[in-house]
Length: 175
Image (tube, rainbow, N blue to C red; front, side, top):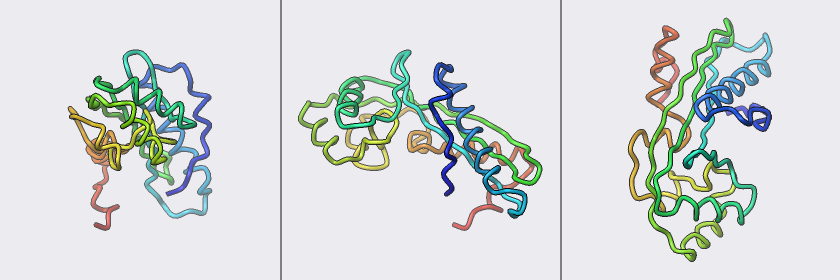
């Protein structure tokens, strides 16, 4: 994994679907650029995830207070998780971008449960202040859609867009 170094703040104000798509593409393109012309032919994947509650995009909390506020806001409610995914071919710069949407219903949480979860440190740097693939799974009542989208990489969309590029995902996997 290569960090892109993309300044996410320059994408503020975009509608959520466009935001995750443009951020994903910018991240993949930045990594391709960092590889330079001497790198072997590569399939570069960029992804970004946001949590949307009503008309509000919940980013990554910077501290415990922000994390508590986000989780308290989501407690007992359904919100949307959007993840964008972009694939760029390093040799031709051909690319495809897509996104996925999953509805997540959060359990009704006590202030004590929220505090204890936040004290674990897991919410910091996670969109919406939780990580479904970790302890955050205990906060979730149900999901409607792709679990991997909530984790942060919509795998079904990734397979689709690799196919759109005329490639087979299994040529790039060593499972």
